[in-house]
Image 1 (cartoon, protein in one colour):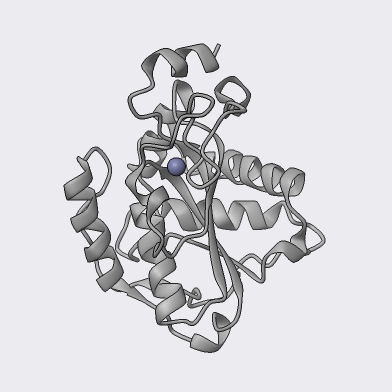
Image 2 (cartoon, protein in one colour; image 1 turned 135 degrees about the vertical axis):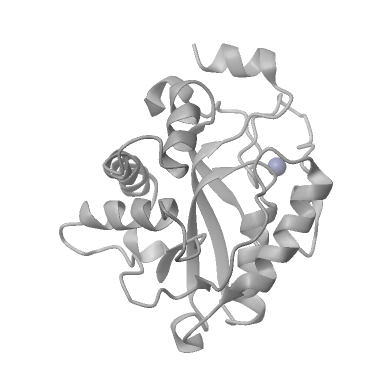
Amino acid sequence: VARTNTIPADHCPVCCRPVAPAETCPNPLCGWGDRYIRRVEAVCLKTGPIDRLLRDFKYGRVEVEWADIFGRLLFGWLAAHHDPRDYDLIVVNPTHESRKVRHTELMLAAAARHDDARQWPFDRAEPAAIVKTHETPPSAFQPWRAKKVAADRLRGALHIPDRSRIAGQRILVIDDIATTMLQLNAIAGVLRMMGDARSVDGLVLARAVLGLKGRASGSSA
Ligand SMILES: [Zn+2]
């Protein structure tokens, strides 16, 4: 599935957005000197079947076993591009416990199951290193301004149960989709300001393709 949605060689080093050679990334967050997230990497572009699948999975319209496929894609990508020692802790953008399908937690658990030798620092603890205390407005399908509000609300809903698990650590945050990076930046802000994390990077399964219709269809060929 991911192979048909390859991230083009020319992409923003901060948010992974496909850009033309010599083009400055139009994502406002990439230019912020005071952003909390260092960079976000993506397994593939959010187009075609994986786009539909991720949405159906999140909203409970397909079997939860799909988590295993997503977990395998994430683990395969990590194994191909990183060393287990690159990070001290791998967490997710947490969902609230009331969610019918806790899609990000399911994906992380599935990725961790592929780590037979337990070499990678997936957060396997209960409670998780970062949790969501209440539901927040959705960020998907919203314009920038609404996404900004949603990210601020998300920040207020995040809680670190045990600061000693975060302090001084290099954290990787996994999520299903990234568009503006605002959500991941909000999580990174909490991890760094409240948890005193040393650094925070992001890894998403699918990177949204904004205003790149021609390039998107070209790169998914
Ligand atoms: Zn960018």
